[in-house]
Image (cartoon, rainbow, N blue to C red; front, top):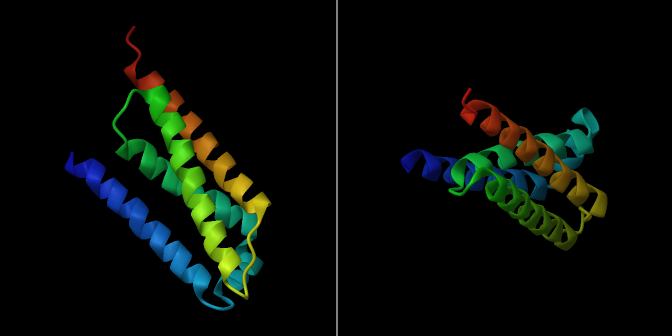
Length: 120
């Protein structure tokens, strides 16, 4: 149980760090220019999806759906915060990338879970 709580704490900490960095004027744009906005979204929300999937307690398929829902909510919070900052803007495309990244990671972890629990 402690491992699951650490994963949730890492998820929360990473989200707060990500939102905080994005709130620094010019920081998000500099990172986006250097690495690509969509790649950053895919990596960040994919990592958060992996942490979330491994932290939740449920059967694998519902856990995958809960993971995508939780990450969609975090993405919505992130985009909402961005809409409040005068030097940032919210993007539906970014939110869709967040959700797609979460779905891909959740599907991969679901498949991995099924492969490792299958008995011959």
